[in-house]
Length: 307
Ligand code: SAM
Image (cartoon, rainbow, N blue to C red; front, side, top):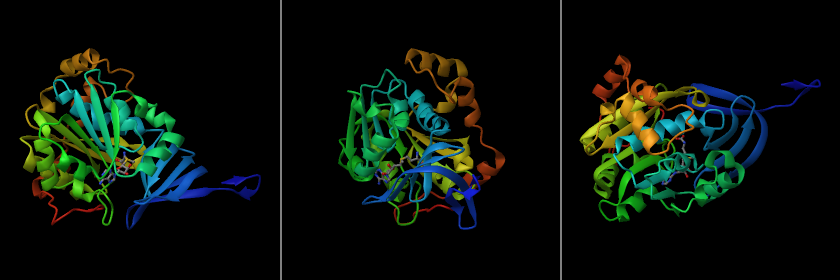
């Protein structure tokens, strides 16, 4: 970028696969460092605004984080008839927490993130993501590995769980939160009509990983569904997966979705709506075929991105 004849630019290069990458021009580096668990960069980019980047992967950008966080949270929250106790695993920026707290049925939200430093950095530098959700009186923040936290819980502790951890990468801190063993434990810790949702990686760059996460939920919950939404800063359709003990998100008509949103006081959404709820669950043939051949993920046979 020539400014006054000088080259004055910084680049954020995000590898999607070993042979494909996305390039973002950076206006300003706000923070760059390494915590006990991961590399952290908070940068202001020309096209996507503020971005949180962990281990070189864009986690969210101010330009389109609402697409991601509304897609991750509201289908699961609306599938449960009355979510009062909600668990969030990961969710460092606080945007998942922000969306959960919009439901007036929520009486308690516990956010369990491995990395306290990441949460403190997001609190300081990304207020437009968390919107002070961390200070809501209903909220408890725990700094611990999400799987260990869940294993210690009494059965039936939560109505809904939202898993918003980093992608399953080899040597990363989150890949054991995408396995049948973990989902089986999580199912026991949810109420009899419990629901969980997880981010499930790219439907293009890691299609087999997305399909395997869906199969893992289908292997451990009576109802499993997958949906996707295009997130521009990820340069890909992004996948989400839900497991439910009773209710099926596909049974929610646009009228019922609208009624539940209104009844719970969930408004000022940017992406999710009664019509969008119908659209995002449509599974195109190429994904249906990937689901057919995919195998559930286990602790001993993890799946890493890009797969
Ligand atoms: N929205 C982002 C996405 O899906 O790309 C992810 C949100 S957030 C930045 C991811 C969070 O997961 C990070 O704050 C990280 O510390 C947390 N995390 C990773 N592994 C974890 C684990 N085993 N237990 C709890 N939190 C974990």
